[in-house]
Length: 324
Image 1 (cartoon, rainbow, N blue to C red):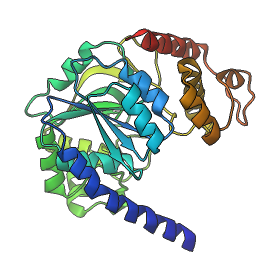
Image 2 (tube, one colour):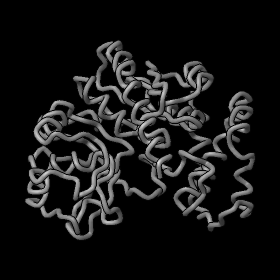
Image 3 (cartoon, rainbow, N blue to C red):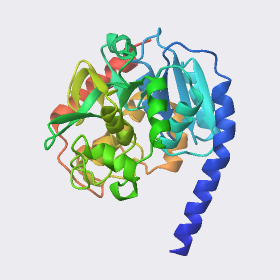
């Protein structure tokens, strides 16, 4: 128990000391036109490399290297083809990076996960076309069957930064996950006005507000809500518009079909890219296995991998690697 408190204190201290130098690096970025930020974690270079090949050249792309090793940062700059790179020397939580962006970037911007792949290039133009009274443009959704709402997933979003920061200021919140009991009376009262309460939260499968969900719900309260420029389900579903894999952040975690599927994809992309430096470095950091072993059940967990998922992954990888 004491060790957990110590570890938590160390993490918070490191995050605090990472914030200022990261903010300075963000402030050094030139004035960008509707940029998209892709936040890449350690171990994810090959997935981000593939994702970058699906983003059209007219989009300003900023890669945030969130706690990556020095060799990964060098590899990214050499291989990914982004317009700009920002290093964070200690891994911050996703919500902490988002709050840094909201605090620092004054113009509208988007985010895209490094395991989100956009086939229809026009989608980026549609996302950046955000109205003055809309806080967020979204693509992926999860339905709230109780309230009959579609709630945006965070895989691919574009923000009206001014409205987002107004909501953050009015309610004194950020992008972090939150529990109902930890919210102020003011926020709980506001959320109850749109039908939310401790027993009815935005995502019926989660007993809390996940990253950005509180901001999304309060934008709804303020009638500055979100808009879907397309309507793609959160679960990986073959599509010629965009596709989010999920469960890729730790290939050693194969608990549950979501993570098992993501780990399979992690190894399959690494095999297909076949970069000597990545293979050598990641074989030292992660267990040496192959995508084929996943299909043959040679892992500590065993799930039936849907053939539609396998086939679409092959299509996705081949399409991305064929692009210049």
